Image (cartoon, rainbow, N blue to C red):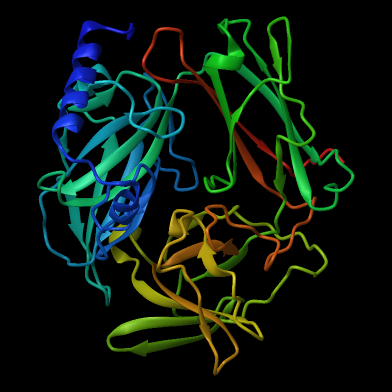
Length: 440
């Protein structure tokens, strides 16, 4: 029972005193601090250039989202490669967050059982690869560190202490207490019907009554595990008995996008359909993809994809973790003139759905197009080319990918609940629905 306690008020007093005694930076300074290399972000972010291929998923299932049930036998598997190829004192901790990914008003011992941090001592060196690296792996929960509450969490991995942060990753702990029934349909509004999808659903609370749902519930929808275009803080349209109805026409629609582009680099011995050529330079592998095309005005074509995910794999390997090599993958999009009011990004699970400096496409005037190069581990990859307007935090698919109402997408519905008097948001419901059987 994490009600407002004496310890909580003491914590508030300490925070108040700390901020009163220091001359806090202005908003402008805070904005500058955000872009410094060690500013801790409550999202998926890699802080060190030599850290690659950070994966977080259910044990044994690379394609699963980072969601685990509270008090279950399942574990989340986390792995990453250190290209400096030595052994470091990697450690980790977890931080509980509210529904909006702000740190909860809880002490760590209120949601962690065991030690507040743990060592990462499971590592192996790469074998028979051109790129040398050390592969690290850990499982959450572990024997020495587990969680006691549902909700949002940030995994923080660092070297020796938290001042030397390596990466942060989001994961969620679900304590399923409500039932969610949903469907994906063609947008109801006639102006949106050809290029948007509507997600209608009902939350049944008969087994877990909700007090003041308009105030205490926070419902979110993710499309293909993206966060930049997430719908957040959705409130019920109607309450009928034990059912909360979210059958909206406008509030719950997404641009449908297009099927994901893909490339297969599980082998560098033969060319898969998207591979134009291979190269080797400066003791590094190179893969040159066929030119991408602007699909914004092209007819929709179904293509079986994995909705932006990646699958690390390589042929003839006994242990893919240490035998899959790295290669530079080169992208090119013909485009007659540079875009003045925004930028294009390569995005997918391999960029953690972030607008990264690596994923930023640069205009090449001599070749009349946008290009980017990413250093990736062998495997199968999905991606999109996303346009980000200057000053915006949400990317759009309409400029390069186009939008088609019949595109196949995954939607993740998450229901957060803060009980009156409590200091944290429970994650009490999760449901994944797919648009494959779209209701037109």
